[in-house]
Image (cartoon, helix red, strand yellow):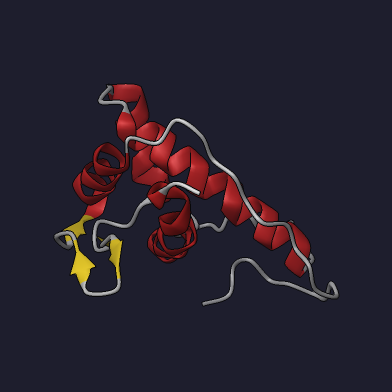
Length: 119
């Protein structure tokens, strides 16, 4: 198993914490924890994919996904990269990862009600 595979769960958690719904909460239709988990996984992949690109179209979509105050930090154990902020932070993380594959663990728990717009 490659070192990058070990880092994936920590990176995913960081991405999930960094993403946020738009002010009108465009994910209000999500009604279960399974759906919420799947949607946030897809958003994390979308965020890294867009952040790796440096185009106006990718920047426009990133502005809807990433809060200007969102912090990004990557690493594990006692070795961590710099903490960066906002869209530029997402770009630093994406370029540091240089990811070309994504995988996600599915929802392995009993499903329950979910509210993807809650704080």
